Figure (cartoon, rainbow, N blue to C red):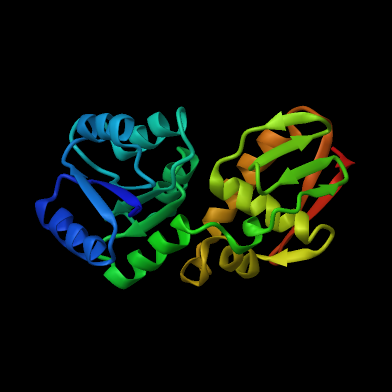
Length: 229
């Protein structure tokens, strides 16, 4: 069965181009011209991936991301003419998995769509990672920290899994971005700042431990046993 992609954008020219390009790749595509229609389609049609514009009349793309994240972990790619880091961070913090600035290359967007729709290569391994305070199960897509279950979005899970398989090592910004988001995102360090922040909030959660150590100007190190804060 073809993978389903929901596109939310109020620009007819953009939706025509996206529908043609994605349909040519055998995706099942539906278009919503306003956020309310998109949220209805999300409930009724259950898309595998969502592409949404950031700025629209009424409900913004940010609010759409937040609404969807309350119910599902469906991958979300945000499109925007804004290229400021603040806008990217706001979108990622609201639950978006990726951010593409208009105008964009269709081939780049298709690459990002493929990257988000396929399961990360490491996640295809059924073997759970039991290390320190953590149990990360790729098959069940579950995470426990000191016996406490934690819900992660797909990208948060992929990032933690990559860290767990490389615990104790310093992983550079570029290596992390390439492994989790793909080579096309290797120069998007703001992604890491947002997602590391989210993982810290969810995993440390008042435990008094620090699991992610920042290596200034280089990257991050995952410490599965934690360090005292």
